[in-house]
Image (cartoon, rainbow, N blue to C red; front, side):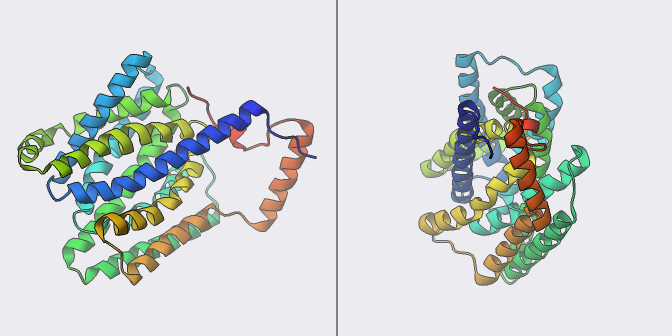
Length: 329
C-alpha cells in the first residue's frame, strides 16, 4: 500500500499547482491585452513599455525583500532567457498579433511544450521517445492548417502565423535556459533580472515608445502597464516558482489550457472568434502536444508498479518530481 505524501510535500505541490494556474490565466489575458494595445503601439515599443513596467514592480519587490543579486552560476541562464523569452519572444509575439487574432496566436504559440521537450532532450539530457517525434509531426500539421486558414486573409496573416511560430521557439528556448538557473537562484531573482535583460535588449525601441505614448489613448497605455505588472511581473514569477519544483516539460504542459482561455477572453472582450479551419489546426497543435506527453500502456503499468513499490519502501519514485526537481526559494 502506498504511503501518502508528507504534509510539507503536499503543501509544496499545491502551492506549485496554484502558481501554475495563476500563470496560465494571466498569460491568457496577455494575448487579449496585446491585441488591444497593438492598435496604438508598435511591437518593439509595446514590448519595452511592458518590460519597463514589469522591471519597476519587480525591482521594488526585490528591494523590500532584500533579494539581492543572483549567484554567478545562474547568470548564463538568466541572460539567455532574458534575451529569448523576455526580449525576442515579446517583440515577435506583439508583431504577430498585429496580423492575426489573439486566439490564433495562442493556438500557434502553444506548440511551445513540444519544443521545450525537444530542446530539453538536446540540451538537458532528457529522453526523447518516439511519441515526442510523432507529436511534433502532428503539431506541425496543425500549424500548417492554421497557416492555410489564414492565407485567404492575405499575406500579412501568414506572416503573423510565422511570427507566432518564432515566438514559440523563443518561449521554448527561454524555458530551457531558465530551468538550470532556478537551481541556484530564487524565482524572484530569475524573473527580475531576466526582465531587466529583456528591457535592455529592447532599448533601441525607446524613441518609438516615447513618441507613441504621447499620442496613444489611455486605454492602450493602461493595457501596456497591465501587461508589465500582471502577465510579466506576477505571472513570470509564479511560473518560475512552479518550474523550480517540477520539470520543464511538465510545466510546458500546463499551458495547454491557454488557447481555450484566450479564445473565450478574446470573444468576450474583442468579439474575435477564429474560423473553423483555424480551430481545427489549433486542435491538431494541441493533439500533437498531448501525443508527445503520453506514455505507452505498458510503461504506465510499469510506472504504477514502481510507484507502489517506492511508496511501500518509503522512498521517492525514481524520476519523480520529488527526486529530480530542484528547489528554489
